[in-house]
Image (cartoon, rainbow, N blue to C red; front, top):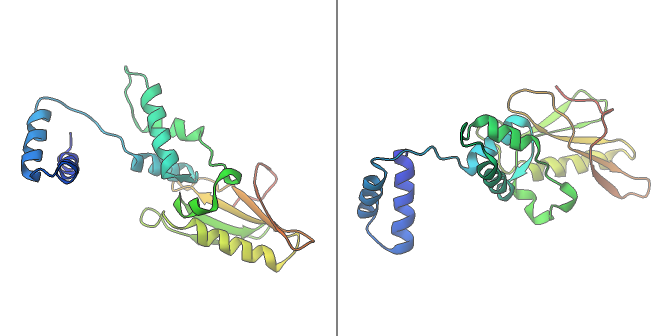
Length: 192
């Protein structure tokens, strides 16, 4: 067990149970003296999602982490590949995502007009991966309002530099309404 994790546990125990932090840390250190554990956290799942270019919310990352724990092979253990495999099967369903949760979507996003090589990036790895979705979506909506029928694409960029594939397609319809749909279409121009 890493020292910083013991310190985090002692902080939580002392705060919630109103006990001395040093005493809690001493008890935890004594307990873990003859044991080891490699701890995986939601932050690790969020990092795996960034590597894969998958938008995700923390609540779903906790669910992914529990799936990895429940389904892992004890003979192999849990490693980055386990997280990556679980993330590959994950999909953030935009249509079911309440608008108040948009601020919780993690990722670095690119916005561009279909068939236009110029893209606008929102966020940067590894320091600015939170809070980028709302400005990216607002910008995509503004671009779509400029030209009826012109698709504007929004993608979650991979920190690994893989091909960026559109996640959402935003388009102003003839009646002035904006449509936002998830992109399952393979004929969109990817952004490299």
